Image (tube, rainbow, N blue to C red; front, side, top):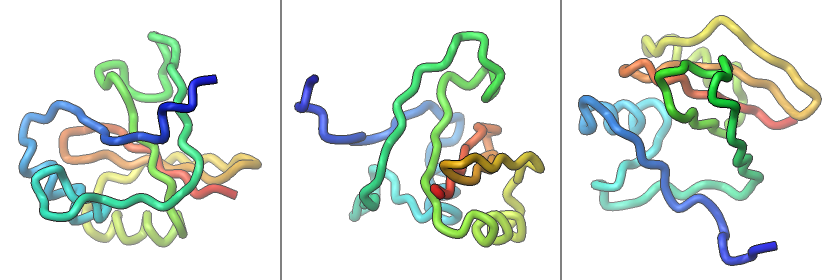
Length: 117
């Protein structure tokens, strides 16, 4: 097993309006972009790295990847996002390992939110 890789160092994706989308993620998720003076510091926890079949319908076909954020108080966070006008998917999923929900950023990217059990 390779022990050189210690974690995710960044998530990079294309955007039609990078500055506006970065501001949206800062406002609603508290994530600073690479241009800010302070970088986003995550809490310790597991990170799932999982390639999906090319024809999976778990997230939109035009979206090459989907980010999953570990969250605290999923229901409270969804209420806050909804009140702020964020597009919230009505679908929910409860599994033995946690609760899941999905939201969409202004460019239509599906984002998975996960509250671990």
